[in-house]
Length: 281
Image (cartoon, rainbow, N blue to C red; front, top):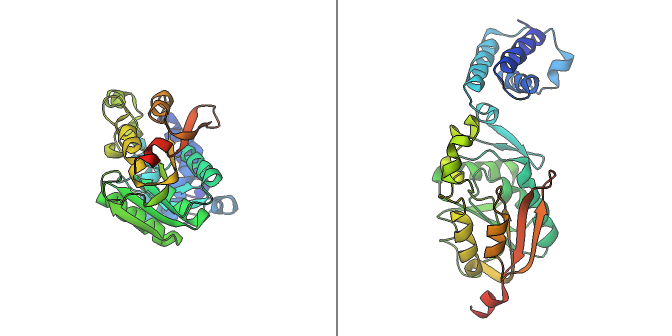
């Protein structure tokens, strides 16, 4: 079995099963099996697969046909042009979350300390640490997620401090100048409507936020003024249909702005700490 035939057969199997982007998926899985970059295939289409490579490729195809996301098979996902290790302990970073980074770069250049709540793979914390070169902290309720995020930070050369805690419970008052988060925001009632790759494989603690999907938003906005400096920023990724609720929570904050993604859907909300909260300290 050579590379060209393996890719053709793999892509056909995936396409017949209704898997999205079958050719790309076949290339990614075969590259992982052969421990090469995908570009290698264009120069070596006639290369014969070794038995061990064929066995691994077959196993990866079988796992993908069963619904396992490609990223959990390869343990890799790119975010902001950097390679992050991912496992089923963490949510797979999505391209949409890069909008959180873009807004943070725009509004918080003068911040000295940033906090990422619910860091998961560490994608936001590591990226902001490397892009802004500021003191960076990150929290997660999952020890396994925090350990993986720390591994990513070490491999990418980001000096991030990780804390296992619920939201911001372990943080000191007024200790950060910017908070970012891609919190859980899926209502429990929507569970059965999710894609099987999401529903059956990604960690539920990183997906679901109570019956309404607003539970973690409510908690973050309520406690953020305690840990933010007087001019601090809060930047949150928005789930579908959440913008009105979250904007309502931030009605007394300053400089509230909502940014859409490339599809025009409200994706990020940013706001500066309220004057009322500042006077209450």
